[in-house]
Length: 96
Image (spheres, rainbow, N blue to C red):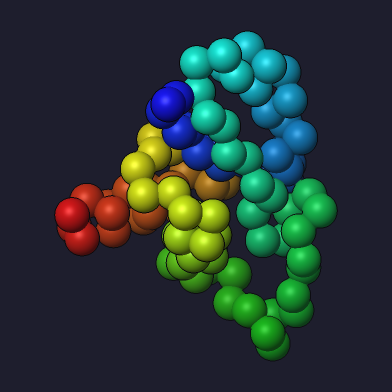
């Protein structure tokens, strides 16, 4: 089984930014690159429905990871999503 790599997009992009990188890494990694909330083809809830903080965005990323059944993965962070990815990594480390 290939190791899983979570690719987190930057601002103001989407998972589409990884299209070339994914083709280069696909033979060695199981790649997961969803759009972050408010980016790409993801929903864009209003501020009255969702708080766009790094903490809350990290919670969405963590929940997505749980829903698709990932329990072990590396995170590639870039730009705007780096603070979210670091929160996910620290939370996973502390809960281990």
